[in-house]
Length: 306
Ligand code: ADP
Image (cartoon, rainbow, N blue to C red; front, side):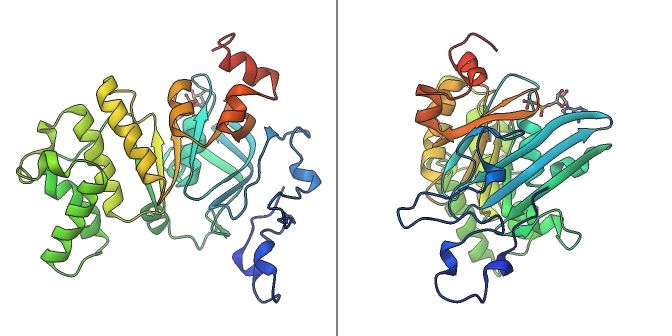
């Protein structure tokens, strides 16, 4: 099994070490292309085809498997996740997309009987290490779910909830400012600015989902995980969320699970195709959709399957 990369493995070795980004020897050539060690060679046994590695990834997942009791739902998934980019996870229902997403913020820990093996690092640190503070990890990784799930509180209190718990602000004025910027970044401010004290449950479905995104942004995460965030929304609300994703990717790494290939093509720069718990192919979204390298990917995107 690959070992987790550790930030300290890169430190103190003199000039030029920043070009080297991993124990596995993933070196950047001057051209920016990568040398990939044999164990990560796409298409080798247990490896997806395509481009597994990225330069300076925020997450590196190596041989990640998930078991629910005896049943293996994710099989030895190896992939890097880039900063300031959207990765779309696609594939037929039940292929392990959500399970994969939940590995990244250790949400599978909350499922009785679930077990995760392999290695996942965030910024070079093993997130499954015993030293990892899980609450702190989840504050760095926001999550948006299929169905908008605002708290039965006011619009203001929904957004202020995380900053209050994590004590991110010192004064009411700071909190007001954070609520304002979060709602603005989520594209909701102009629609709710005159009714911040109203119950969030009175908003439309699309507005509720943007409120949930604002609530996530208020905690100032580095990564946003989205599990089919538009599946309960109408086309106009969906377009709003997709526009928002496009804006947010300037600042965040985003991983989105979607059952819609059109949505994956619209919002993502990289696409990962899962099938029966395995990551089959990963790469540049345009390339995966126009020139898939694996027959299973081709079957799926051409509609022959799924
Ligand atoms: P997808 O997101 O691609 O639809 P999931 O990750 O939800 O797939 O599910 C992958 C497999 O794991 C499925 O067979 C599903 O039934 C199973 N599974 C998902 N969640 C649980 C759970 N909490 N307990 C047991 N099995 C689960």
